[in-house]
Structures are given as C-alpha cells and as structure tokens.
Image (cartoon, rainbow, N blue to C red; front, side, top):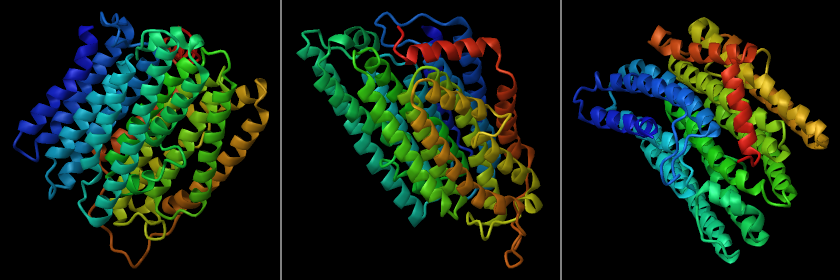
Length: 479
C-alpha cells in the first residue's frame, strides 16, 4: 500500500518543489528527476504487486499496471524534452506548466489505481483542470479559445459521467442491494441490476468518458487544444488524458460484461467507434495543419478502441497492446511536430516542407512515427490492430472489421497527404530559416519512444505479455 501511495505522492511533492524553485532556468529540471523516480516505483509496483488498501478503494490490478506503465514512460520522455524546450521558450514563465504537468501525473496515477469509481471520476476531473492552463501556455487569442472549448466540452462530459455514476449506484438500490461504487461490489451485483437503469448509466458514462477520450461527436475540443498547445502538452493530452478517459470506460465495461445481455453494449460501442473513425477519416483528408491532423488521428484511434471493446474476446488483448503502442507513438509525433513547427515557424504543410533538409533528425522521426501509428510492421500498433481485425472476423463481426479496415485506409491516406510533403517536400524559398536546430535533448526523447514501440513490436517480454493477458481477462469481466 505504501508503494502505491508513493506513486501518487511523488509527483505532488515534485509539484511543490517546482513551485518553490525561483529560477525559470532551473525549475524544469524537477520534471525528469520526478519522472525517473516515478518510473522506478511503477516498475517496482508491477513486479511486487502491492496488496489493496483495507477499504479496497485503491488497488493496482493488471489493467491499472498497463495504463500506469504507458503514462509513466510517456511522461518521462516529455519531462526530458521539456528541459530544453522551456529554455528555448525562456520568455515565458514556466512555473504553471511544470506544476501542472506534475499534478496531472499524480492524478493519472490515482486514476490507474482507483477501484472506487468516485475516486476514479475525481482523478479524471483533476486531469481536466490541471491541463487547462497548459493548453493556454502560448497566451494568444487562438490558445485561449482552445482552452475554453476544452474546458467546456470536457466539463460537460465529466458532469454527464457523474450523473451516470449516480444512476449506477441507484440501480443497486432498486435491486435491493446496498449502494456502492466499488468496482468489485458492482461486478458482483451486475447480474441483478435492472437493465433500464444500467443501460442509462452506461450511455451517460460513455458520453462523459467519451468526451474525455475524444470520441465523435464529443471530439470538438481536440483539434483546437492539440493544435494550439505546445507539443509536449499535446503528447500528454493524447497519451495521458485520453487514456484516462479510456480507463474510465473500461471500468464501466468490466461491469456491463457480467450482465446477462451484453449485445446492446457491444453494438453501441462498435457504432460509436465506427462513427468516430469515419469522422476522423473525413477531416484527415482535408487537413493542412499537421498538429490538428494529429488531433483527428487521436479521434480515429479512440474510435478503434471503442470498436475493439465492442468486439470483445481476443480484441481486448489488442486494446491493451494498442494502448501502449498508440500512447508512445503519439508521444513521438507530438514532440517532433513541435520541433518542426519551430524549425519552420509554421504548422501548415505548405509552409513547413522539406523537414528532412531543415531538421533531418526530426523529419526522420516524423516519418517513423507516422508509420508506427498507422500500423506498419514491425511496430507494435501493427500487431494490436491485427488482433482486433482477426477477432472481428472470428467472432462474427466481419462487417464491422471490414468497415474499420476501410476507414483506417482512408485515414492513412489523409495523414500521408499531410506528412509526406512536410517530410520530403522542397523547403519554401520565401521563408527564412529559424534558429531552431535538432539537439539530443529535443530529438532524443521521441527517438527513445520510437525505438521502444519498434522493439515491443518485434519482441514482447514474457512478463509483459502475461500482464497484458491478465488485463484483457479482467477487462472482459473476469474477477
């Protein structure tokens, strides 16, 4: 229990330290120090599996371990990147950004270990609040518009999720069971819960956590927030906050899969997932801003998660694998997109062309991240998507699998139309070269993430493979 407590307390202690450090130059160094300690404690928690708290409100199960590992690794890369990035942006005070990132890490950690759905909701709401000032880091008209849109959509969504939790607890009362928001209690009572109240709770929670994930049509905050936030903040939004929303949805899914009739939940999830992928594919085809393109790519992959949950069975292993692959690959693309943005002074594909010539390291990483994210072998997303597609055909969801594959091909084409000109195009002669140059600290973290995604696609360590199998079993309703 102490080990789990330290996981959440360490970032909070780091946030206090970052707030007290007076130097704008030295403050960002707190981030990688906390990140290293956090990753070490996460590995220890995964290996030693600490027991749950006496109240069972806090427990690190296999699902929580997968989410916690992905978030901690992503935060570690972003924290190292932040040191050089914030020195490059020395005109901005970085106290709020450093503190916000650390508090957000603490909240994401709490979400990963929460087995009380009320605590999980509180942790996810905390991530929303702490990331809002970070979206506004550039302090211009577009960033404040993006921040308000982010706050409005996500706050309405999380309020809907809270109402869904009330419905969930009330369904136990209607069934004559003592109300509780403990995951294990809800799973035990699931077969007895009245379907009307449970279905209503599921819809509300899907809308609420779907807004956090960025499922269409609750995705409208993503293009603005991802487009206007710094690259490292975009990486945390895509690989951290969206993952927290997915975790909330999976916890609800665990309860619903124990009820007698699960087809209604599967149909809703596959429908919402396909709609999200379709919306993303349409907008990807006509996108010229490569940071907004990454936002629609995130909508696409959140839709893929929903489709995989709807299919169930072996696709749930694909969900857990894709969580790691998608989160880390998104980190590569967002960090590198920030580098290319600074190298050209623009996010538009017409103005930012020829990255391989102007910022060769970042240009190569942008291409590699694109191939990884879109499921090209040997990267991990290729194998996770293969599991989803194979499960769809083996379990009788062949039309869903075929439609998903077709939409992903359209999305691939849309991303290629933006990324390939940025990487291989001819640098505009009418735009002066900026002072930006690739350095080890700015290009090293995304390089590490890309290598990790490739290595996990080639060889999955047996302990991690067993952990993923256990997480998939729990997600399907196993107790």
